[in-house]
Length: 408
Image 1 (spheres, rainbow, N blue to C red):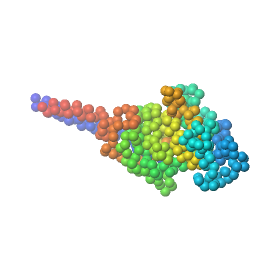
Image 2 (image 1 turned 30 degrees about the vertical axis):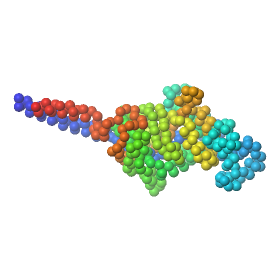
Image 3 (image 1 turned 120 degrees about the vertical axis):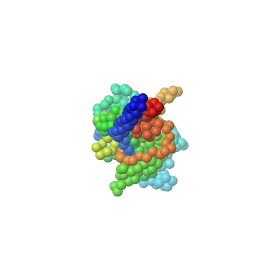
Image 4 (image 1 turned 45 degrees about the vertical axis):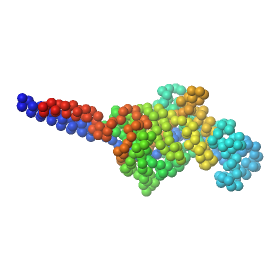
């Protein structure tokens, strides 16, 4: 009997050691990578004149002149009022500014009440290419685009259709559009960084089961001597559950694609207080230099997007040549999801945003809240379980039972 007990003890100990070594070996082969977002902006494909066959939208001086004539000012007066453009609010050289602010009914602020003006018309994208995702599963719908890189049909990106013929949203690659560049250049110095963590990478080219976490950090990015975001810096995640997204996805041929989920990003009032994407996905290429580059796409409340521009009123309008009432009508017209049950008016619009990220170290706070804004699957209960593999915990419990029997 003693011989049998000793044999069992030795067998259980050997099995336990083999399982632990195997579990840690498997864990070692499953890599976790951290990144900090170094660029985020509206995705706009640039295909030349074919994108906007009706021409680009007029500059602010042009549509201000047009509006002054519509309001009954003479050609001479309109020219005089815009002589010192852009002028200063409340000063003689900025007399036209107050006129433009109430150009709808001469009473209400046109940026807050765009319907007080008749739709001025916004020239929109008529080309066939755009970046984004097939969000509704329809390949041949009238609003569908084709992905210029993959040839995928059915891409929905009505935000690009709306904004793509505005000069400040256009730029030949690799340059970024001037408005997005200016906004992001300011934001990355004052807004807490966004970080991305990808775990479960068994092969950087092909991994069937990865988890992607998107957080807001408590730290800002650091710039290098060239003004670029410095890589390999450490960032602590914000425990606020509103800034924590957990997604599931896979990597194929070096491209990470996540499953459909809702994604919530806390941003900054200068750009957008927060983003709330529904039916959203990420498509990010793992670049040879260790960076990420790709697209975040989904549906978004169109009025929230309008207000992110219109809240700055004349300042944003004149500097970006973005006619705000025309934008309001175009966004409402192009909205393609989430119909209001009473009016039938769609409340959301399909979007796509460019995302670039560089390597970083991510530190998770101890008080991290397990309630996720986006949770495509149940997240591991602890970091130990996440790092060692959920199955190991169960195996250890089973072996503990066997061990107790063997030692009896």
